[in-house]
Length: 517
Image (cartoon, rainbow, N blue to C red):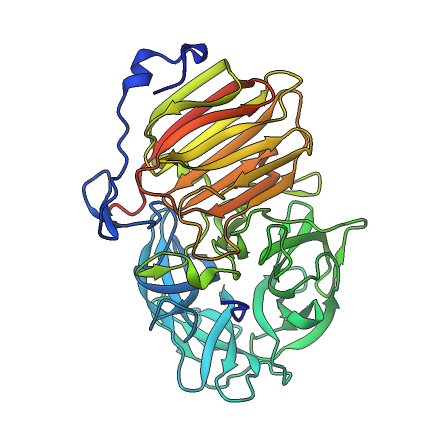
């Protein structure tokens, strides 16, 4: 948990059928007031995500305490119950049966006169090792950073517990359970390590670029095990660690602020081994980014996810401008949940499979078409929420740059492109809509991606105020917020220096997860 660091259709050359060319696709219409109406005619706030979780009101940042318990996915999150900027940090709470539709619950753990409730974990203490529940009703235990409100600003690790499946929480009377007298000592990531039969905690020492590991038999008394770091990117403070097994390796996530590849905050990862005491990174690792976009930070994964799944949720924002994004009456949203696997030692990410149940109709499907140089419209109106899957390739050796523009209209667009000279995939949001609220917001965010002979595979989730791009089989991701006019719902191709080859392209509309907004 960081302190805020700063405040027509395409020409016949594409072979698009007349039916596909004339089918109307509903897009919300701009209004003078901040509210618009979605496809169902219900009230919605401008820029309110249709698919991604955002609280009804007020500020949110880091996801906390992700756990699957008794058939529900719990999402806790940093929350200000009293305003739409950072402050009064507490744990908000939402639950879901499918990782797509979320029900916001009352504040779970609230700040008080003495402390703010910074980031942390929730574990299911099935054996009641803590004694905070009973054999019949084992507790959920939250391990969080208690940040004192006095002049000391000390950060200490504390507990809260629930014996009613996470609905209500009680702070442990013996808090804090770990205190080293430090101001920068936070974000406990806790899990049960079966091989050693004990609880393990990873904690950030932000200004030292270290992750420290502790062990406990009862979640109350902790003993130091080892330190990891510095390694990888150290251009900003380290925070929000998360250690977990994935295949035959262990993965350690470490968030960084600033110093990310797109500027500002980002999350890096390391692979290696963990013997219950120390994390040993695999040899020869450089800096590896979870996401190359500007808006994927502080992400952690779920404890106790069924079927061995590893599900990751980030905060979809950036500390460079998080307090100035033009949303109301809320500020902040979560990235769409992703399932993680490893491929050749690299993270592979994809939207969780539950998204498929939200697909509605096919908006467009193309195979083996060529689009000439320049921009060509595919659809005038995609709507604000859809999924795009495509394999694109340069149509001639001279093609230097190609891709798609999403949320285009009225002179605005967000470009998802590939630079064949640099060998880079990018998102260009400089003309994406409202960009003037912060000097740091407009930009081009790039990631190195090799171009296979068969073309560049892309999977894109487009929402009211975000674009998430998965490329190269999910081994490269970019996430950016965008704030286009609600009427800007066009989809088009573009190419420079030559034509664009569309091997395949499919666009599908998605059913909103928030039908009342």
